[in-house]
Image (tube, rainbow, N blue to C red; front, side, top):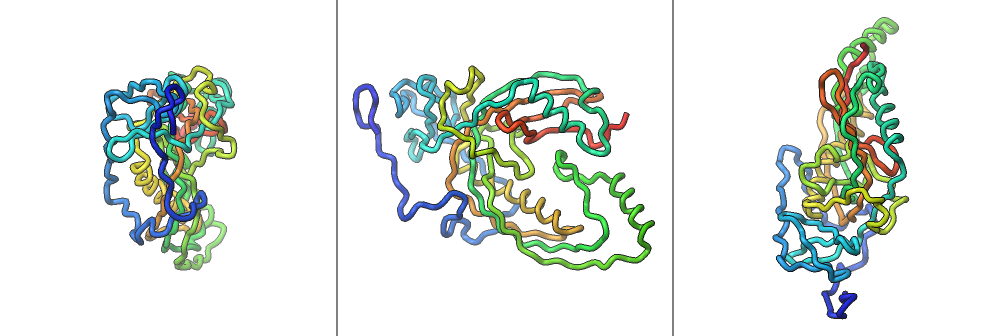
Length: 329
């Protein structure tokens, strides 16, 4: 790598030993055979301190990062610089973006449809007060993850568990009771309960928001971005919207992806059984990429309670949010 202005050598990008690993495939020995334990808190990896006289390794322009940032965007060429081992600054080679494909009105329509979705919700969007709506290009580490999980449960209870797609898997108790009562009235015979032991094997490109504290921007439920539409990062394609730096390192993102893999495995297991008794998850995370995504963040108030919706500005889908479990009046 050489400076575009003076020609001085800036450094050499190290190449990984051995054959390259295909995207989404686990590297040998990546997990060490240890299952993910959700009871163990994720160790927050503090990024190395930024040098005082840091320059962009792509164009040579001066960088003025805030304290604690791990990913810094160049104001001139848009290249993303990250801190490596020993405090060395390196340009992120795999840096992409998704173009903004929807406007504010389309984002609000998508959010409104999501709010009103469900048997126990009526005109939630129409009876809510709209708050701030803002578009930002938010950085995400996209971590290719192979998930292997062994689970035990029972099947044959007659009614599968009902869960809200937006409230972290909470049961809708009233609706579940009604369906169980209806099933019992139609069939007086006791259903045959079968014990199930099975294995789940799935591959996911798990996105981890690279801005600490932006938990509301974290996609839930195994959400994946449309990476087929990604382009090389070009700040000029942001249309003037804020392009955010990040303070989460790639190493930390891999650890956080293990927690998301646990949720993906549990969600998949609950689709297969009526009652999940236990599950052991073995995630394998490999090196990913940095992806800047346009996100519409909408704040609203429903019956005095402040809530939010985060909408993928490229695909037009809700990727996280809050909505009332029941709202009929």
